[in-house]
Length: 148
Picture 1: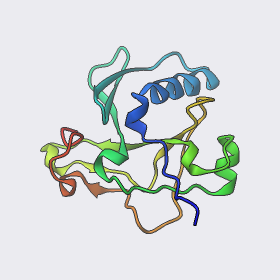
Picture 2: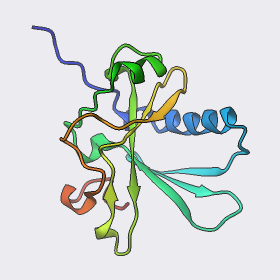
Picture 3: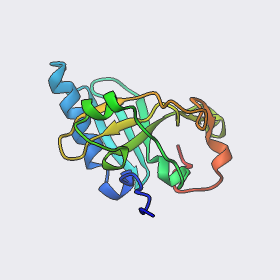
Picture 4: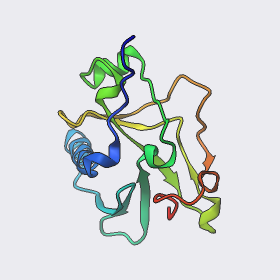
């Protein structure tokens, strides 16, 4: 039996692929660099709008929250990202930060998939009922990523 391949663990790539992907998207769309990114922990990246106060969004390593997270992309999405299999990609999920922080949610249904070699990135909608768009962060317990 063939050994099951697991996706690239986003945090293991040190967040560099996420930073690079955001830069590529901004270049493609001819947008001046609009975000300042800061790696907070191995599992957490904060994006701040340039020339504006406040947080724009938070990206998290989904594997820090859910080690068995198994996103599977459709064939046309894999083709757009120039890979054969979802395991060749890095993944980040977006977190909606609320006050209090315990009410924050994470979108496991629509991860940002990144080809670490080409920097191509797309936010995709997974064709599964295993994951939710507004999964309560508090349900994951006290993990490294919980400070979202």
